Structures are given as C-alpha cells and as structure tokens.
Image (cartoon, rainbow, N blue to C red; front, side, top):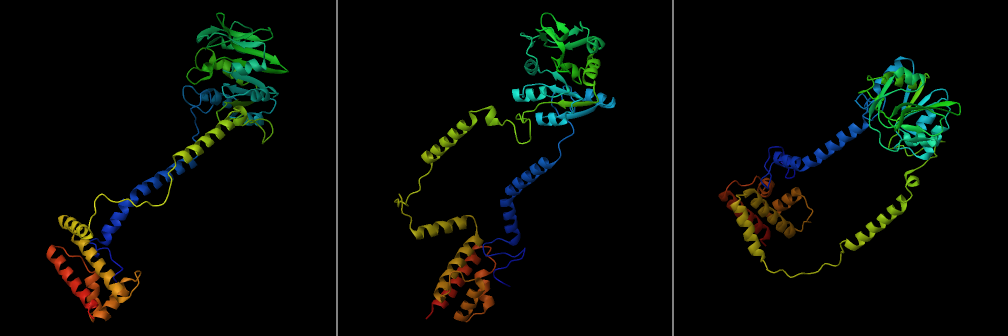
Length: 395
C-alpha cells in the first residue's frame, strides 16, 4: 500500500478518511456552487425570449386593463396591419406615407423626435400627447386647468365623433385659430377630441388614453371612435415611446445621446471619478516596513506544546496528536538522513529501512498507519517513534 494514496474507507494519519475529506470539501464548496447555480439560472433567464405580452399602458400587446390589445386585435381582423414600435427610428422606418402613425404619450419625446414625426406624410393620431400637439400645431393649446374625467357629448360635426356619440375622458384641447374641429367639450375646458388638416394630412388628437384601454373600450362610443380614427388606412404604426429611446432619429448612426440631452453628465462624471481617486489615496492603507512589536507576554515553546497537548487530550483527538508526533519524527529523521524537505513518503520509508534495518512495511505502518483510538495506543505510538528515531541517531 502506498503511503500517499487512500481509498474511500481508509483511515489517514490525522484521523480522517477519504469519505470525510470529500464531505469536508463538499461543505466548503457548497456556497460557491450555490452562487454558480444562481448565476447560471440568471443567465438562462436573460437568454430566454421576451414574453409575447407587456404591461406598458396603451401598448397593443398589453392584455391588462391599461393596455389596448382589444382595439389592436379588432383592427387586425378588419384587415389593418398593426406595427408595434417603441423607438422613433423604428416608427420612421415603418411609416409608408399612406398609413396612420399613432403616438401614445409624449413623456419620453424630445423636440427632435416630434419634428421627425411631423415630417411624415402619414396621418398622425396623438393620444395623451398634448405637448407634442402644441409643437405640431402652435395654435392648439392644452387646457390650462386639469379637467376631470367626465362623460361628454360629441357636440361637433366630425363623422367619427358623431358615430361615437358619447365619450368619457379627461383633459381637453383648445383651438385658438378656429382651423381645427374640437369635439366632446367639457365645461370651459376644451374638447377631448380634435381633428386638424395640416399639409394635406389629417392630425387627430385624443386628450386621454382611457377610451382606448381594454377596461373601457366597450363603454359609451369608445370602440366606434377608436376603430374609425385608427382604421382609416390599412397600415397602422402603433408607436409607444419608451425610456430607452434616446432620440435616435434620421439616418443610422445619427441621433441624440444621453450626454447630448443632459449636458452636465460628462463634467459631473469626471468630477465623481476625481473625488473617488482622491478618497482612495486619502483613505487607502499604507504598507510600510514590518515593525517589530514586543509581545506583552512571552510564551515558552514548551508551554505552547503542553497547552496544545492538553487541548488534544480534552478533545480526545488521538488522530491529530498522532499526526503531530509522526510529522515531527519524519521531519527530524529526514534531516538526519540528508533527505530534502520535499522528499516523498516512499523515499523516506526506503531510507529509514536501510538506516535501521527494519522492514519497509513496518516503517510505513509506524509513520503512515492508522491513528490510535485511545490513550494507550497513542502512548505506544510515541514510544515506537522514539525508538525508531533513536535507531537513526545511533552512531
């Protein structure tokens, strides 16, 4: 049997076995395996395709109460092709010049994007996008005061509004030039629905998303108004601006980046980096030469040895005590025989067998055999190691 190999059930010199060492490695490596598993699961989730539905208000793939999936599905059944996009560049690419472009909300739009949408030849429908409408038509203003959501009559001659009859919406638009048709007015708050002819195309504005949502499309005349306003052509670009749309418009590679929108980003970032470097230099640990510091108490080596022996005895760690005795004996006899400190167990066993005249099997069993299980066995092992070492030191 080799002194450096061990089967699963073999007892080693320190009282452990192959199984116990494997269990100890498993306990030490288990937290890292858990972390690795979490990373792998997270990576797998990130690589999965996006769900076919969303929770974005007004999105045509949102089946929730705030979504507009019902309107989009009915339009598709009527032969209208609906292209759902979330960036201005995608909206410009999808527009064909003979369809309708729907813009839901304008909170993420900048002037550059609105101007690009205004340059299209398609009819434009703005829903809950008062700021964008004011830029497209400066004579149209959003109601200055908040107008609550109320049920309103058409009160105009627009065919789509007349077909709808009634509408429940909030907010309103006021036409200061008289060129637009305003419908569904509220008391002194403007109309919730506005139609304007501009440069040969139709611009329609709805002050509230509520009539298009799945939760309210079947109320009043919401369905009639939505289907007539959005289904005038066989192609509809349904544009819901998103936060990751950083104003990329025009030719590929051109557009507005975050530093362009917020000019102070770069200087603030540079200042933060400088502050971080100064903090690191200021608070970093200085590594100097090793300083000898006198200990308050001097512990003699013999006392330390006896203290360790008492700890082994109290814990009944016969295997660890035996391993310490064997390691000390092996180191001393190897030095006596002129073997290097890197010498392996077989080389040491062979050298001891030649020096003492003992059999190699007996020497191997004494230095690398199973540990004792009681105090008597540990005492016998200590005596045997002492005799072995005395034979090597014998002149």
